[in-house]
Image 1 (tube, helix red, strand yellow):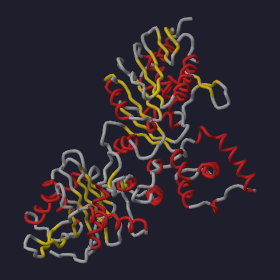
Image 2: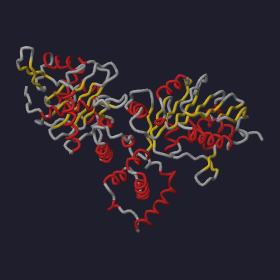
Image 3: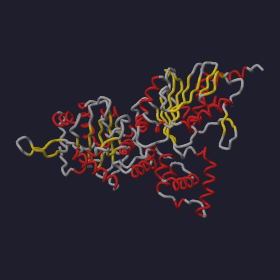
Image 4: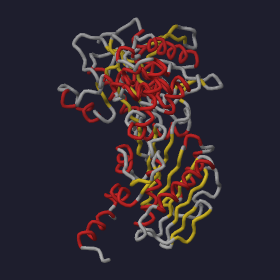
Length: 522
């Protein structure tokens, strides 16, 4: 039967990339948890994922949110809407690879007969179509992954569990078509390459777009699990969970949107697998997802508590329009590199730590500002500004915060900045330390000399103040760096993997200012 003009128009609209979701919901069926074949109606998380995809994407998620299933559907659409497409679905082990191929076959076979292209081959975990397209399912570690193909859609599943992921990713990326899409998707697995890639993406330090999906918002896929959990909880405890019984973390989760049914389900999960395992597989925040090995310098539990408090209190930096007296130089960077949580009060003392780089796009130059009560009031970070430019920024921030006491680390770009602050800007309120010259004479040096001994001392001061509740941190970037700050097997302190620790060091230097007995007025 010929299509009516109206139906032909609708079909034409469905073929547009802006209507991917409608295409999937119109033509693809899936098998639900009750083993019934039903139209594939996407959840809110799946829709957000599909609508937000860019060329390079990295997804940190809670378990079983159906992102792999929707990626299979996207690959089928790609191969039908765009003939001669090649899609690659890579799993971390053979069992998962088989499961993905089974989903692929089921979804492909559910297509309407008039839409489904004729198959050339359907074996060895690959579907080849007569229109020139193909979808291949393989395991990570296969040396031939992506070899010889130009790939239009690539999905790398459970990437955090891959061996040598960086080498494999580089090989696959080289095969990606100019208009292709790459999706890295995984639950967390400690502080590894996936962790580094995800947080670099979140901080706009690489070309990936980051997504995070927590277990609370993915409730639509678990309704029956929650119902069973409520029944079991009532049998075990004789009653349902009440608000008055909620622990601090549960209260924060409730503020994030968790229902009482979800919290009862969570209690049963925690009882069977432990709290750390739950945090890793069912995270409520991205920081919580990455469970470390115990070599971390800072308490992960305390970091998670502080981050959840920031979310609960909706702590955010002050909008630029609400700050009336900000110097022009700082206005240029506000909202991108410079952030203020509290404007300076007349007559109050402020303490500033500066950890500087050479400004060549690698390590960051960071300035952290704290008040006398130990609250973080401002933060500046940038990896493109040269030391002489940072000296001008430090001077502006120092004057803005009532000529606060500045401690600059002397390494890297710090030497140059100290000289400019001292002799060009005549900034006098700076930390000093004692040393002895070649003639054994006592000399006062400006700045802070970081070595193995002094670094350990200032970091331990930071740890003590943080874990005893004497610091109020408002920056989630700082918390993120604290999460990956560790002692390696050689006893050296620093960020794990390719992560940064510049905000950690700047904060430790601000604490040096706080503990300094001198405050030089000028």
